[in-house]
Length: 284
Image (cartoon, rainbow, N blue to C red; front, side, top):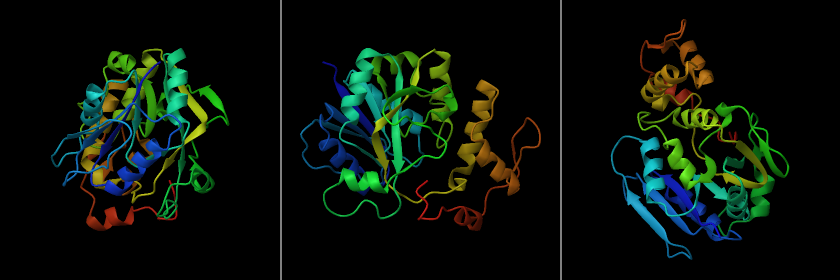
């Protein structure tokens, strides 16, 4: 019987973490352990659970997403690694499905993510029926109704929720820690998954629910990290990642992207960052 480690990162989102943990606890087969990398200003806390929990502090002002995910994987003992962003709530069959498929296939699996609008996660016990009714599928990521379908575009891999064998993660080399801060570290892993010849599978029928939180489009609050990571990705793969965001930044006059170079012209103003905040009614 394979074992499964759930892994998550948290930074100042205790309420989201509480719901993530509740979802794992309500799973038909809960994980064999949960590893939490805590980057919060004040340490997070969790109640006693039916499965072991390890919380590792990674303090500091930076947001080292690649390094934090690698640390979580290094601390995990399960045969299967299920990476979940802290705003995820798994449906009851996710852990079982990831274990069953990965016991048979050396692959990377992304369960479908249904995005929840503000207010969809109500006080009280979680209701998978209510979450399913409120959730909306991602507009550009096609998932089958049931089963798994191969996805040939590595740019559609994203680290919000995915699972793979622990041995495969280490064979891939994990996330590239030279990507510092927000942006492109998961797309880089997607391209290395493709280069390795590993199947990327999209799994339908076992949704993960994305809890609403404030967001920005483009995420100008991470401007400098995004530009540095985009340039690193382009140097590695000769393709520009996050092209929609880069185009929006160019339209604002923040960058010169008129050639095959990407040059910072100026930083965004506080007003421009505020104007990029998404409408709370939009779940994406």
